[in-house]
Image (cartoon, rainbow, N blue to C red; front, side, top):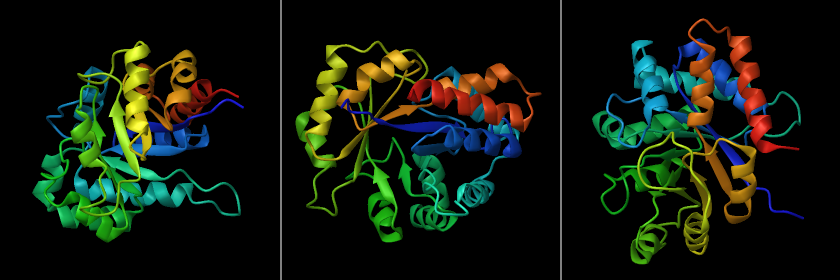
Amino acid sequence: MKHKASLMAHCVAYFPDARRSLAAARGLARGGADYLEVQFPFSDPTADGPAIQTACHQALESGFTVDLGFEWIRRLAAELRPQTTEKAPPPIFIMSYANLLVRRGVERFCREAAEAGAAGLIVPDLLPPEDEGLYAACRKEGLEPVPVVSPGISDRRLAALTDDRAGPRPKYLYTTLRRGITGGRTEVGAGQVAHLQRCRAVGARVMAGFGIESPEQVEALAPHTDTLVVGSYFVKQLIELGRGAEPEQIESRLRQGVERLSGP
């Protein structure tokens, strides 16, 4: 039987606004996404391409604040909570940048994230040992901290990020499939496969993203990773729908998008 990687689907809280971004997240979950990555927008992101930068800018214009972001997470978690013995809802991982966490206080941010219903945090620019206490605070609150790496990382650094001498070994490791920013299509080749195999060798569950937008890419990458992370593909669909799209249209479009990538 073929290995089938799980899918983490990305959305931006408050893009295009609070109500319709909840519809987007519902669509991703109901389409079958195994994890949700919810970005808390920041005005100066370092790894995001044009589509996600546009989404973050509009989310901030729509009134996003960290306080409202946690309330949004709390509402989403409640909406996705099963009413019977159905399949458990996808865990929610908050993704953002160091600036938001440090300004609020890392320990406070982690505590509020856990209280809102998040399962983990993805913060690309906070990595041990210079993580401002993020990993310790996550573990204190029962959150999974997810290190983010890119091709070209040394074997020594990769091993250090997943070492258990400074605390419990991270359950997940997020790797980009190429250097640079999100958005552009990634051509799957021997280099990506070799990098993914190296990441999997450290023992964490590998989440791989950047430039995934077709079932063919999913099929090519699935044997070599545990989870595929898809972001710009879904954000671009929201942009295409336009500012006048109704929540029902958004939910349906993103549900279909997940189903297209996941396959039968």
